[in-house]
Image (tube, rainbow, N blue to C red; front, side, top):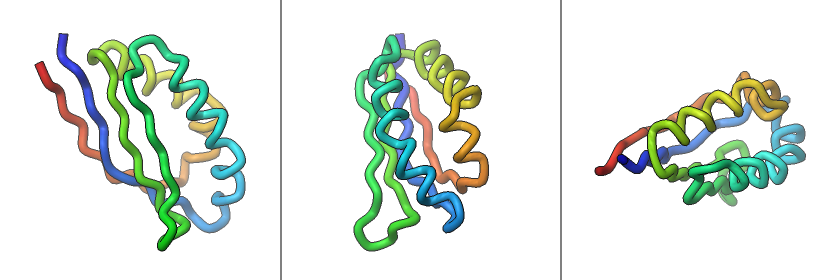
Length: 93
């Protein structure tokens, strides 16, 4: 089993910021409840309010891929469709 880590940030368009801020607590809660989620952190930048730093760890690739599928089909996935994502994904043995 290899742990999967995603780290980076997202840039939220001005017109989507309010919806993203409203939906973020539920997105975090649902992700923490996923099987295989070790850590999930999303934090709005205090200097650049449209930037959110993201850090995720999952126990393996299967858990990470489940998270990716769930997010795409969720309310969060719909309201963040215009977000610019800057991520790096790595696997550790």
